Length: 115
Image (cartoon, rainbow, N blue to C red; front, side, top):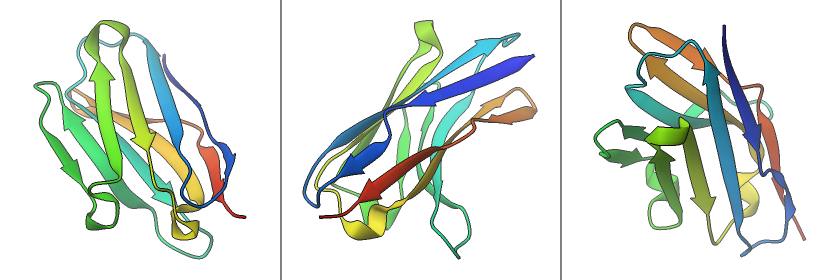
């Protein structure tokens, strides 16, 4: 059984910052890719950022220069530092991992950017 527990969401004013965390636990041999996705109301889920076991990263164009993804392999934890937040960043953020041929998802954490 694999569990992903996310934390760090909340309400923040435009221009503010938040840091999301996602800790994976359970029967995981190795995690290849860790990623953050988001889904806004009425929209499809989209990739925000991903990071490989070797540290290579990819970002959605909309967050480049504002968000930073990182991971602690020893703790099976991935982070998303979000700066200069905009109202359009409002969404439920999901953590996802690819371990071998299996993918696992967190329950999601709400991020609301509003004044």
